[in-house]
Image (tube, rainbow, N blue to C red):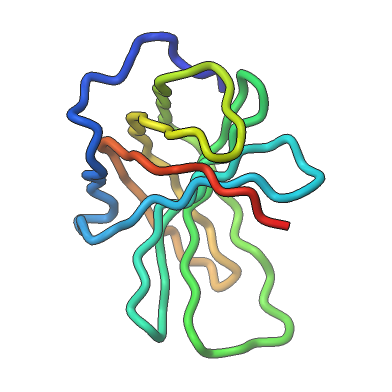
Length: 135
C-alpha cells in the first residue's frame, strides 16, 4: 500500500487504540544493513507482549499484528493475514536514525491462525518516537 501524503494533525503524542486497549508505546528503528523502517507499537506485561509492526520501505508499507508469551513451542506455524483496510500518514517522506517520527495509523486485519481461529485486529491513533539504529 502507498503512504498517504497529508500531514498528521496531532499534538505529537502517542495515543493508539488497538484491540480495545491504549497502553502501547512506540519504538521506531532501523536494523543495520536493512533499508526498511520498523515502527513497533507494543504493550509489554513482563510475561507477554502484543501489538503491531508497521514496516515502511520507500513509499510502501504494511502492518503486521503480533503477540508473544513466555510459552515456547517448536513447530508453531505463522498466522496468515488479510488486509481489509489500512492507512498510514507520516510527517516526512524519508527518515534516518535519530530523526523524530510522527504519524497516524488506522487499520483492520483478519488473522487466520494455525488452529483454525479467525481473529480480527483493529487499531487507530497517533504515534511518535525517535528512530533508533539497531546493530
